[in-house]
Length: 290
Ligand SMILES: C[S@@+](CC[C@H](N)C(=O)[O-])C[C@H]1O[C@@H](n2cnc3c(N)ncnc32)[C@H](O)[C@@H]1O
Image (cartoon, rainbow, N blue to C red; front, side):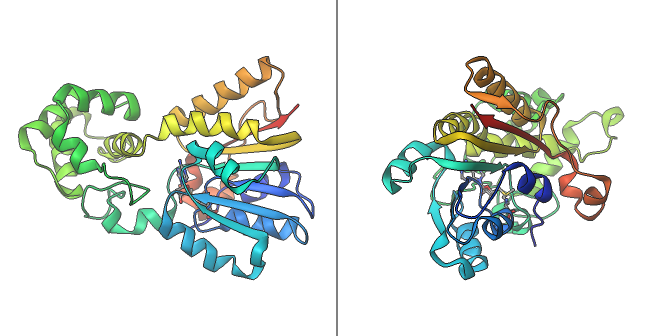
């Protein structure tokens, strides 16, 4: 089961009311979407996008009681322009991005996202995409792999890990990769709060799904389709994402397009982290169209 993160904070900050039109760019299982629909119906509309068809059909099932007040779109939010043009949606009153993976994706071992479960090195959010993590690791040069681990995982031992991968490839399973990473890290550095392979997994996932480029393009398009006084809420889960959101908001503030509502990002209360440890690193930034 996926537990929606910072749910009350999102609902409060989107300024919802019956009749409003809201865009959920990361529908997942539809947890945030349900809470939004409860506030905007009757008369409102929720447009839910996800690049994972599995997530989309779960959400459609979970939200079927709202009938055609919810619209489901399979696509990447980086293509918001074409999605909006095709559906003739016009501007919306509020937009949500709840980035990263859902628990549904993480818990499905065949997707290869989890360091806790053995699975194929897949990591594609959109199963129609050709490139997966195994192809990436088994075809790129040592230098290119090290660069991915450094840039997208801020991994200190990127070079050593890349060398170990290239020496032992082909690598096909998550368990094989974890073993390679752990052995590549020097003994004296094998401690710490997070699993030694966490940064490698994060980096690969970002690279496979081109997540940072998608976020930048998605944010730009979203701001364009937001009505005057409409709110945008973005929940990020690591510093690379949060930096992009923070800097994009700042740019738009300078151009007098957005007003920043959260000077500092909102983070979950201790109670939320206790019941949902996944929320630990969440940061919510809210802005309003001027
Ligand atoms: C954290 S989950 C969303 C959970 C949802 N808010 C809920 O409460 O159930 C993130 C979802 O966004 C989707 N996603 C991530 N990046 C995407 C992108 N660039 N375009 C479309 N969907 C994306 C993932 O497939 C995943 O289902």
